[in-house]
Image 1 (tube, helix red, strand yellow):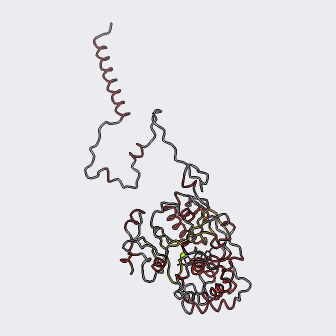
Image 2 (spheres, protein in one colour):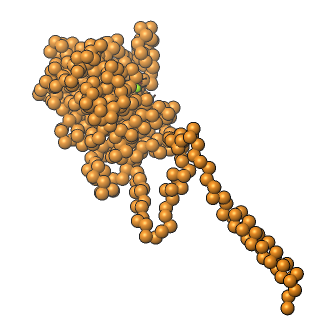
Image 3 (tube, helix red, strand yellow):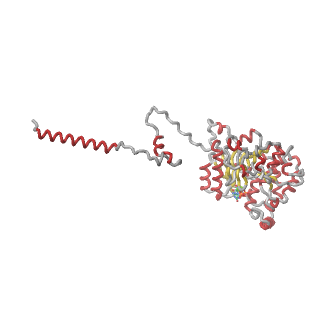
Length: 415
Ligand SMILES: Nc1nc2c(ncn2[C@@H]2O[C@H](COP(=O)(O)OP(=O)(O)OP(=O)(O)O)[C@@H](O)[C@H]2O)c(=O)[nH]1
Ligand SMILES: [Mg+2]
């Protein structure tokens, strides 16, 4: 039989054991005490872009097997031409973006691509062809491929498309450059700029990588697109039988093209069969073809049908110009050359002004001036910057001659 003393020891031991168990419980579970939420630091004070740890944890998948499974986001297939379930992609036509660039243009072209992807191509995944007179390096290729949602293709320009043809007198060309530098003509002294203009005028559409396409959109470094393009712009061109789409027009510097128009007139006299009926001649000449008024579509933006340049009329026209040597003895630009070609060799209703995209290439803006369009297309430009309706722009004349309706409020943006 236990003594009263050993009973008391037993009770003390039991109390001690209970205290130990309670302390162990508190240490493993932590305190249930919650600090009151500070009034001076409300929940909204969490910076918007920093992940809120609580919110992140709340999004962790539930272990409960009865919870509905969240479908995995479809993996982006480059160019996804095979994604028949996406109508945008299934209805795509044979079209591509095309960019002429140097390796050193990488950062500038990435800016342009980001604009075009965000406003348009993220929904369509059209291909993008990059052309260069030197090999593109790996840094350029991997950087742009990471941003383009379609397939990227990189092409080297054949030597004969970026060099002096054998009929060009190089000394005469050098003297012409020198004279233009004296006159302070922009890019007047540059040989590469002349090769670029000749290439864009006569060869980009013949490049091997361009052969499979029917339409292209030319994109230059450092451009901006201000508005959503919520429709397939290439399909729009095809469905409406448009051959040349543009956003900004203005007169060319006369010093760069002293003999371009007389050469064009010779061509027209020699090959009158190539002139389209109902062409756009009145827009480029104010005196029925006697002189050129310099109006041209600004070719750093172009959405066009490749057959415009691949057709017999334009091919012959380019060949004629090239033989005269004005790309080197003067500084003929691809913008007036394309514009004259598009104005003479196709009916004028094939030309299309895009007034709903919002576009910028230094130093001119195209910004839809009517508020309704800007809101509907989520544009981020200022109508006061728009060049379209200003005195120096050739676009008002195009609207008048083509009987197009001007946007509401255009008259407030003429200067
Ligand atoms: N590969 C290559 N591309 C060139 C060269 N020069 C110009 N380009 C490209 O040709 C296009 C037109 O050249 P730009 O220098 O933009 O000419 P521009 O638009 O008249 O003049 P900027 O006001 O300087 O933009 C751009 O896409 C350039 O990246 C060159 O020497 N090599
Ligand atoms: Mg440019």
